Image 1: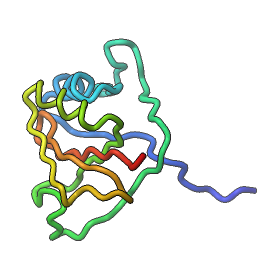
Image 2 (image 1 turned 90 degrees about the vertical axis):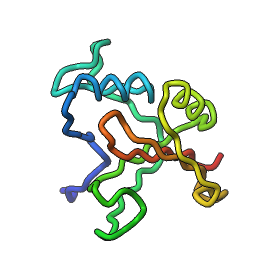
Image 3 (image 1 turned 90 degrees about the horizontal axis):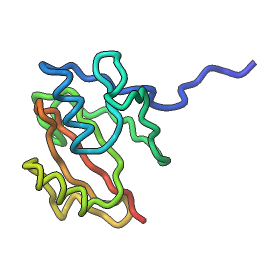
Image 4 (image 1 turned 30 degrees about the horizontal axis):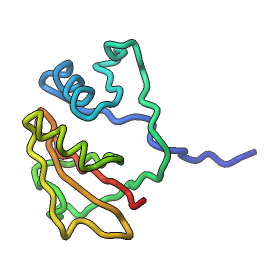
Length: 128
């Protein structure tokens, strides 16, 4: 009999003051399926079929400055076409932070944004 093990992330669940608005923010600005409070997305989809690649699950010290101290969680999303995504986000009035020291040929490129309720999001484009 095979030993039980975790296969991957099954879901990400956020609390929100306005769940409909926040779900729409993710769909409209980042372009993937996000459901609201156990209901399908407006197009009837339940799932986001994430595209291949590894997932990092990392625990940081409570006093880390890697993301805002008043937040327990930061979402990291794998992206392609970082420049086009940054341009679209900025066109939508979303502040995007980039820093040359975040980017490394062996790990890729990074940018930071916040969703409509202030949750930190790190965008990661792995190296080609």
